Image 1 (cartoon, rainbow, N blue to C red):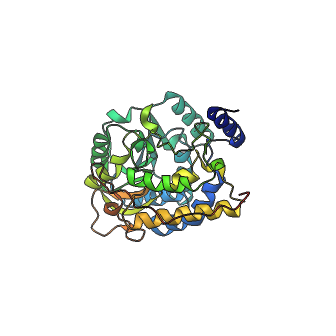
Image 2 (image 1 turned 90 degrees about the vertical axis):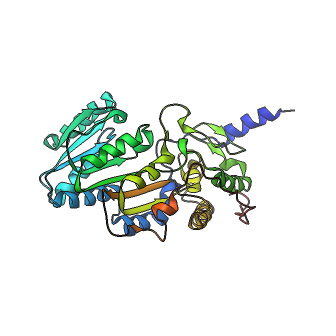
Image 3 (image 1 turned 30 degrees about the vertical axis):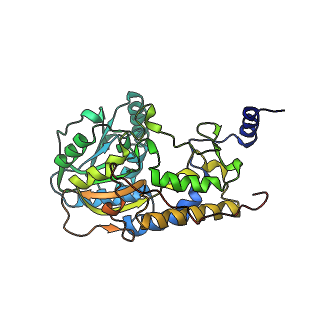
Length: 346
């Protein structure tokens, strides 16, 4: 008779399938196109990331306050910055220069090759730099940080440097993670995830990133090695202390798990049942965030050093509503009256 461990191994083999875990699963795109894109357009005024950054940067350049430089914090291979530069040129911007800060010399080499291939060499300066020790020496019309802040340990120093380096009406633009460190769930959100987990057939519990079956959901800490999500939970609070928000969109929590790279590959956007399940998870996310029970895990934001008007937000999801005090004691959820009925064969 097979041992419990042997049965687990067999289940893992049964549910595992080869997927490209670096690509977001198709069920994520189902969710983002149906739910996130309309909010992105209405709050952030853009229908894609390049337009989001490009529109804000173009407006800042148009204010002509003595700097045509754009700082990118943690630019990676500069693929995003190249596309944004193309967008700016298409919008009529002529006088601008990207200054890209990146720690990895390998990525900087790839960046230079891509920039040269795009014919944009005069538009870029590449700087090998540890962002944790960066100090500004120039002023910038705009600073962008695309999913780089959650890798930074010295956030206070970085944010202070950004604030000092911005022109009076310059903008700080970012899309990044704002949930618990290591991309874990806070206890109140974990409670909700575990409830949903208890309703699911086992074949949807295979983690494609970690290559294991999680019959019990593991609140995995991604910051245990390296800098992934090292201070994610501090980003929003520190930004609120130092900047004023012009536009702010917060989103995500449980949907990050069910639609993300780890478990999202268990679902197909071609399956009506799978899409219906994601719809249910999204609705629960929205309900709990609106009631302030759980907090969003991601944000897109345009910030300034000062801004006298109320920020454009989704519903009443202001930065204050969406911030989760790391030291707060939050009551766990009561038993949720939530259940998705899985039909046989789904």
